[in-house]
Image (cartoon, rainbow, N blue to C red; front, top):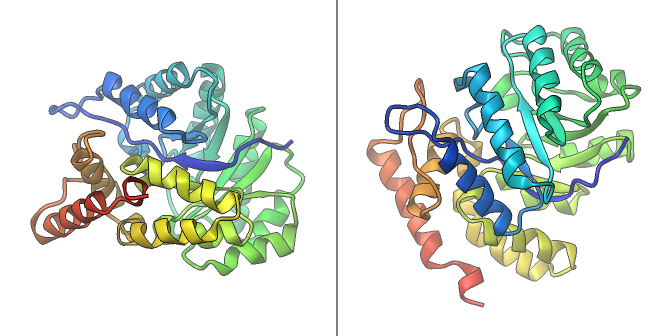
Length: 300
């Protein structure tokens, strides 16, 4: 099994009302705006979609809305971030029934697994669906590494096709390609190593800050793909102060604040997250406003 996934896949945010209920209409508007700005696919209910803050019924309704908005124009990949393996299996089955195009599967959230437990979790979810699966490796956030040894154990699982690599060490891209060749499609999953990942062989970029600046994100990847590294570097260097936010634990609040400033969403998040406050909020606002005032796509 292989996919046609490539390019920029923003991890779309979930929009809430002031009472913290989901605003499904605004969530769809965010998704539709990203598609209209030229992204190549959508990650729905990833970290930025606040997956673990939603009820099961809410998640399925968000997925239904995304499939309705995408209308087959771009692939919709659903995050699978569940407390345990049975819940992940049930969710994967329901997501497939809704009509998503693929799954991005995380380790079970119940606790930090051993390698054997991690492999068993991924195999069990994969066996429950015919959809292509991208594994999500993010050791800083989830305290477990989808190592080469784990990936070797999964080589024969045909619908596990890709890896979102969010380790901050860009050497991982080369190591994985050297180890597995084309067996797994590799995606850059951390915004501030995105261009490094593309240069080293990643097929695409699963992005957080694209939600605030989609035009520049799309052009960055397009410039790289057409061999215009000068333009790609110009955009990447302009973008970098914001891209670093994706590597922080408050990335969701920062990205939603950036969306708000750019008129693309609201910053309301569900507890235990709270909107940025104090000096952190002041600093992020200044960073976003500086980027907005110096946008390279507006100054060509």
